[in-house]
Length: 624
Image (cartoon, rainbow, N blue to C red):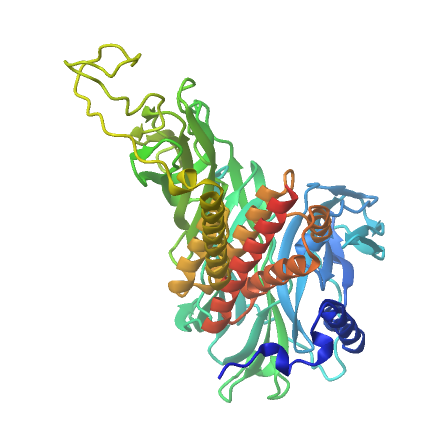
């Protein structure tokens, strides 16, 4: 028995008024139910902006760091602020050092972005930083003025009033301290060094809840964090006749970006400590009772002498320093005219791979070969004694005519600090052969024998086979009825193919843009290899690069309000924009979150990324 679907619908949903009736009901639903935006606004974290000077009491020989911290916004929401004006203080570098982090406030993770400038005091007294303006999502906020006290003499610390229940404390520098180890204090510009911070504490001390106090700074250096175990192993050693327990706090690879004397700022930690029952002497005098006390421990600052690179650099040198090797791979060397060929150049070794630019691929000027800017993939290994990794550049070339195209070798020049000389690496040359696409291809030739009457080809060499012309299609032989029947059949075939294509697209949304498809494929590879942070990093890179390519003139990391304006101008729907921003926020949270998301969240994010790129591709293509 067959039932008609309309039998079970109320009359208001049938007939010509169905669309209008549904629109009215949807409007009532939107009025009665709270909107997503309103709900999101209620849950949005509060925006706070604070400014401070570190330290608040300094000497004439001590640098002062001005820090403005924005909590509750991401870096893309903030317009980079100019440095604050200050009398009696000289700015050391106009470009700020930017740090991003996630902090937990009232059980919720919130973004924080810090901008830091370094100043050198010029005179004693109370020096004042003027209020500065910070623009977040188009709204300008003003900070309060900040005062720093500058005294003569050596390095000073602000006087802290003792707590009411504090007993006089003895100097515990011999029982609890941080040791700084630098792999090399004399470097070339761009050369890698590793700084390590290790905590030493007397075996009679019991420490718990040790944490970093503030942020560690290294002006004039490019920094890459090295892995430190989340549960570090505690070792035992002896120094000056005393037994200490030790643990590794932090390891950072630093690359100086300018010459001269540079300073690595001290590392400061806070810890809760108490003495054991066997503590005697100094420790017992320090702890007036067995209760837990909060301590702050600060390491020494470290100075590095940075010298310029020597002369005699080859023309292809672009500032790369380290030790590297090249590997070249091609997807194919034989192709058809108009089909793309991918060429992968892998750069691997020790050094700052993040700053290496793609070597130029320069075909001969007369070649009919279309080339595209390469895609980049960076993989860094942070587990060893120093930073190493791999950077892959993927070049795409498309032959426009039939023939053989020889691509010249790619080359990379770098300075090797160990050998103190420049070296140039070169790959092999690649030859690509393209077939098809040439005019006149497939012309038959004739040997002996008569040509058909009226043939204008003239006598040709070779062999030719002449066949009877195919009969005319039935719609040409059947008159008007045949033509009508053939047109209807053709239209039905086109509609069927269109419906199948729409169904496949709905089942498995795939971005049409090849660059986005490659990046999302790379993100999927990280997901399968159980590297969630790399997956989110590659997914965010794919989304931003895709939008930048489709929106002419847009940078890869525009401010959120500028990006929203550009997408609105291009005709992208509001829900598509919100889906993009939600996914970007999820990528940013996951990269800094203390725990990795589960497998289901990763799979869902991958599917959403494909859908977002497909929707953006369709909207931007329609606008174009």
